Image (cartoon, rainbow over all chains, first blue to last red; front, side, top):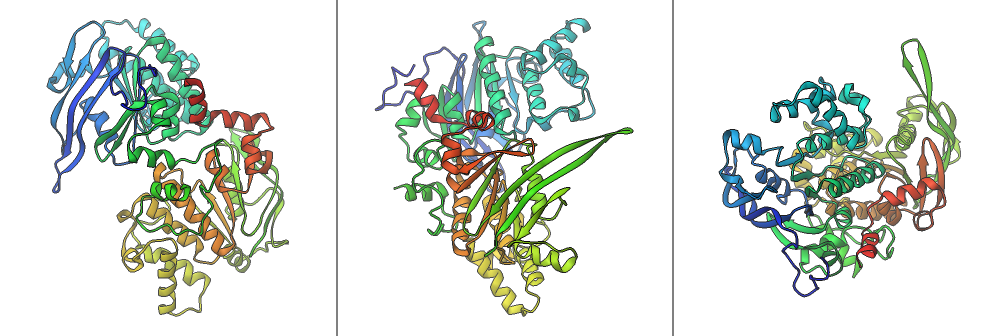
Length: 309
Length: 267
């Protein structure tokens, strides 16, 4: 994949057949002063691909994810663009046109989502089993109780949680385990796309690493595509095939991980890259040359860049 | 100029379930020194005892055994000793959204510690100090920021207010418990740089508690690696990160995002 994308013109396409194509999507929050959260975004997600979506808070990356899954509520409004889902059975669905029953069936079974702060999105007064079961009773009404039981157990084991934790309440699980339960739930219906919105931000590094490895393993095994949203660029560089950098609602750069890291084209990508201290790289004059004043309101990535120069 | 010494400190929590009780050794025989102008990083996973150490340093918990010494002398008991101690050791908390009171203005947040620790100052002097503090953390125009309430500030600005508040009593030691982990990545460096420059100006001793090895390495002189209540490895920042000796440090290091490693795989 990297061979085809040499430095000069960063490739925006993907070698894989697309599973989700977003065309010129714009989303506006219709408040007193309308906020254009997503502006004319076009992205293609390949089958089985991990696409990273990076950017600062407020850049519109979560709004984009909510738009794709049609989860936006007023005042948010999709003002332009289309989202097309190409199912593996060979038919395409226009996500923006769907409504009612069709939309309900589409959600979770075709595209599922792991939400930001997912570990707090479990219902505290219901057992893990009942919550997993709920997905199946809703979307797979034909399944017998026994079948559902076995499947719930299998799902948990798939994400590395013991089957006997099915009877646990969320407060009896650690943050990492709750996160795994949420991922298991997102995988329950064998979706073709999983959208993960900052799935590991609240976890410490060791647990985060375990979960990322789990996601990578499951992706290889089951072949779903992942749209991974985070502001942690070093993390994205490690796990994604391609990375889209967003700023003020626009995708300013889209390239495969290697190209983005070695030859970033856009000024903002460079700023973002330079605002991360490297774990093993040059210590340089990065931090701790503290006597330099940080002007109020200045973007700090810029500062860091100046200091480096 | 303050030196803080933690000498063989242990904290045991009693866990009760029914009639049985068990001991949890949250911190087990930890010793280190915080010296003026130096930053010591304390790294480890959640549950390793990092925050328990911070709590003991702030006198929010009492050590089960061991001593905390300021400039070589143990801290006395009673209110006066406590006030004196707090004017020397201050803390910046992790969550700038939770550590500021939404009902009070920024100015009020800074005025209180200034009055408490300098009771003889008049109103104008207090006001001047508050504005000077805001300017020190680069919140300029200070008059404008002093009137604002926390919800009118961004996360980075709030954390600057929290830093200004910690500096109000003119401490010699600053404990920063994950000061940037709640902030957006792109503004983290700015806040860390600010802390570093304030440290230089005041010759502060800083304890930087974090699980982010990359900033720990760039921001500190010495790193202590904590695992299950004990310090398993310590040394100069670069040595600990680049040439880790203990298995646990290696685990932490391997778990941290490192684009260079992926780069090596891809090319």
